[in-house]
Amino acid sequence: MDWTHGEYTLSDDRERADQSAIHDLLRETYWAATRPRELGALSVAHSLCFSLFHRGQQVGVARGLTDRGATSYLYDVVSGASYRSRGVGTWVVEQILDHPAVRNTRVLLITRDAQAFYRKFGFVSHPYECMVKPEGVK
Image (cartoon, rainbow, N blue to C red; front, top):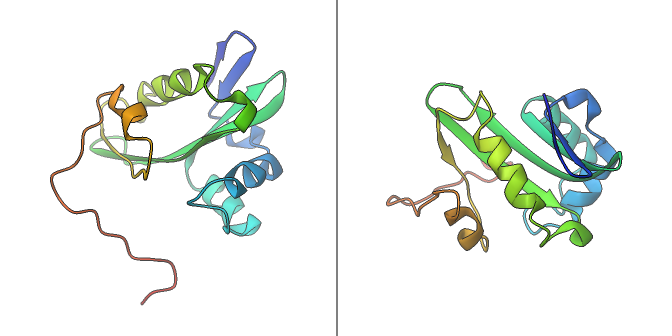
């Protein structure tokens, strides 16, 4: 499915995802800066991947995991630095939250510093502690 907003296109077609652009975008984040390219490609292949394009060039990405019935997890939401603060991120998250695979689910996300941004969409702090099992820990 594709959506347009001015000169921007958002697509959930995994085949359109530019793995190199996604890797470069994620290298600029605090959460995925060291993620190897091959693991990034594997995660795109096994998730609902939203690619943001400006005039045909991939400038953003967001991914989700969903069981389509109860729970979704939104993650790896990032756009290139020169595309931030233009309202396009708000549009992207709106489209993702309205996606047929996501819209009727409880959506989880983890963020260190974007709470105010996500509150605009109805996200609230969870009353329980978030726990994570790091990669490679048995």
